[in-house]
Amino acid sequence: MGDNKEEYREEENKYHFDITPHIVKQLGEQLVSDEITALLEIIKNSYDADASYVAIEINTTGQYTKENLIYPNHKGFIVIEDDGYGMNEDTILKSWLTISYSKKRGINNHKPKSPQGRVPLGEKGLGRLSTQRLANICEIFTSTEKHSGTHISFDWRDFDEVDRLSNVKVNKSSYKSENKGTKLVLADINQPQVWLGQNLEIFKGKLAQIISPFEENRPFEVYISVNGQNIDLIGFQNDLQDLAISKFEFVFDGENLIIKGKTKLEKFIGNKKDDYVNYLFNDQGHKFLNFLKNNTKYNYIKSLITSIFI
Image (cartoon, rainbow, N blue to C red; front, top):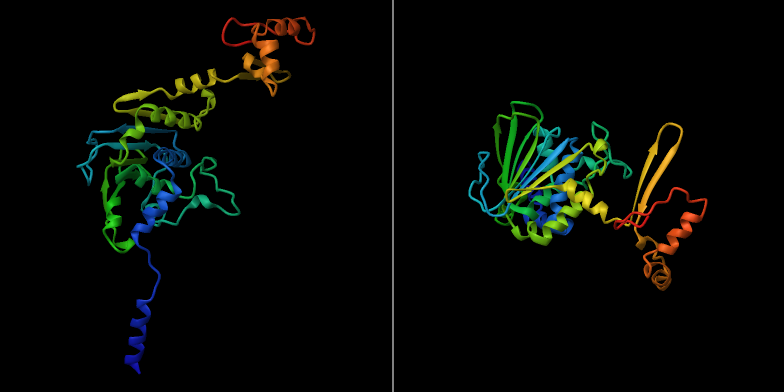
């Protein structure tokens, strides 16, 4: 009778759910559409960690030597560093090494706010899956306090070499940290051309969308360099604003709301382009401007000798 029980238990242990590591890679490829989206997700994770800044260094050909890496031999790297609240061992085990776990899911689609009151920008733990889009090697240096930090690393190529997810090799060690925060070193990058030429301009445009245009109310700064050249994101953002058809400024002094605005002639194209060409474009809007100036309702209008119409 006893032998039958033991045999039954052994037979029971043979049957259980498991997952192959390759499924995790497929999941990442399906959820993260491209390299630019992948890096944006990681940057959002820094914002979600209440960081005041994130610094991104992209090198398409070199080797990263500022830290002692477990995988020092590589070509090209991306480093994402922030001063957020970092991760302790429990967070690493749950948030990084347990694939399905994410605190950002919240309840009834309401994401829990960060300790500083930020609503999370990142989507359900995509940051960790995004790293495989960017590079083969992932090395994480993270600390929740000064002097003591955790360093873990793994190779995404190992996910194709073993038959069980738990058999993927993860290296762990300690290091002395100067400050709290997290540094991701993504080495042996997959698509170096994504960060050059016109592709870089696309990335800058998408990155500018998550930076506040108002310097006095900007809780999160983004710094980026590509192959040793610093990218001026604020200047790029200002250039984008200059391309806008209209710009408005609102000032409230406690009693009065003052609205100032500038607009280009193209603002008046509307649905009837022929009317725009016949009545506005041909004389660059001079008759229309005189009409507005002579109307007593519009006594604050000035014409500017620039690309701005009024």
